[in-house]
Image (cartoon, rainbow, N blue to C red; front, side, top):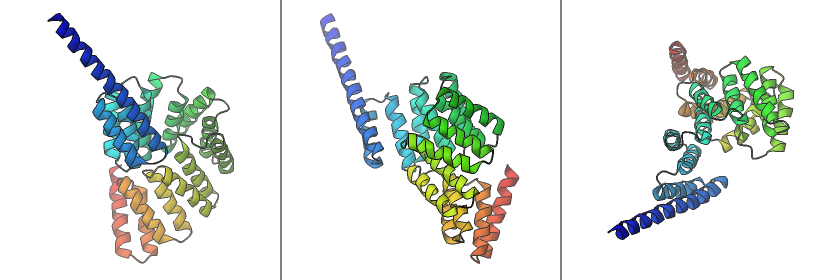
Amino acid sequence: MRKVILLIIIVISVLFSSCFISAMFINASGANKAKQRKFEEALKDFNRAIEHDPKCALAYNNRGLTKCYLGMHEEAIIDFDRAIELKPQLTVPYNNRGRTYFYLGKYEKAIQDYNTVIKLEPDSAEGYSNRGITEYELKFFEEAIEDLNKSSGLKRGSAIECFNNGCVSLISNKYKKAIDSFSEAIRLEPSSYQISIIYFYLGFAKSRIGKFEEAIEYFNLAVIDAPFYFNAFYYRGLAKAELYNFTGAIEDYNKAISLEPHFADVFYSRSLAKEKMGDINGAEEDMGKYFILIGNE
């Protein structure tokens, strides 16, 4: 009887080990496809990896990232939640969930995740940098500068330091200096995990010095890399409006609203564009939504 029980234990152990190894191989295959932007194929691999090992936190994390690129934001956050539940000491899913919240304009939630990253890993340059840019978006400028400088101190001579310097320059309204820093960050690390944000801030800085065509080119790159980045669509719309391309501006405002329907400023901007297009009723409707939203803030 003991031999039978021992044999069963061995068989179960082998099966679980086999499932784990298979899941890791399939997960790696999915990660490789995601790098090639083959997101539908990658998603299938991550689904299979989770079927082989339902407790594979990395597979949930990677599936969450893939779902973000496929526009499945709520499902992505559920996957990050599951990865965190399985591996609460792993900082990667906190960073990724935080970035997802950031791209969707849910900055307070993003801050909470970055706080956890820094608590778990006090020397995380990424954690401080991510929290710093989120504080910048919330106009907590002193806190942002402190976090960005802290991040730079942890990664001297790196792309992330150049990125942080660019953000500090934005806060100081030194747009040309910011452009130089962001450009250097791209030169040092063209595949940076922050690349879509770098493109966005380059577009933002170019807009601030009146180079709207160049700004649009950078916003285009930002939304290609992160098609769920609502702010990139919004600011691309603003740049198009400056060039009197109100049809294109409205298309971008519509996309921004589909990603973040509670962002008041985009309704205000779309109202102005609709007025320029002669859609007075639509302009008045959007202005009404704008006042409702700012009244709820």
